[in-house]
Amino acid sequence: MTRHQITAAAVAAFLFAPPCFAQSVTPEGIAEQFAQAWNAHDKAAFDKIFTDDVHFIPTYDLVSEGRENVVTGIYGAHESWAKDTTLTTSKISVQQLPGDAAVVHFNVLVNPPAGVDAPALERTLLLVVAKQQDGWKIAAGQLTKPNCPGE
View 1 (cartoon, rainbow, N blue to C red):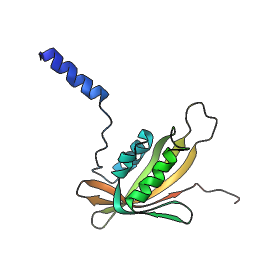
View 2: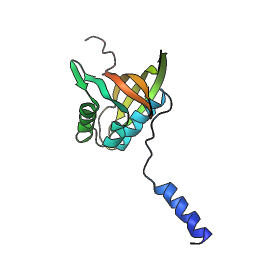
View 3: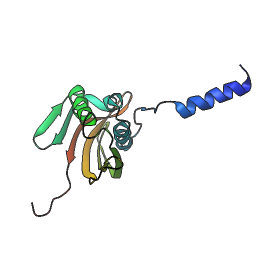
């Protein structure tokens, strides 16, 4: 293989490689990882960001326990209404807790697919993250809706 062929192969590998979902090295990085997993609609990417014993509250009075159940629930949305949506994050804040834990709080905007006449969904995620051997992971979380005046 010539030098030119090696260079071309390296460039092609870089340009066409699937996205890398490495574990977050910081607590605030988990917000970006959540958005990347959402936007890739990738079950395996979600699986990498939760602890084995995670507790997640996706809606009022519903607690999903364990990584398999949480990922199945989130991915279920991606097999139906969320399959072509995109998610953006904003207002990320982190409160470091004693030991290898932190609270990560951020807003998400779930945008409908192009050409769909529907409003974006505004939500807030409150996550407790724990530092694991392979990076920070979500140990607990709650999804909330914005204030609804007059309700």
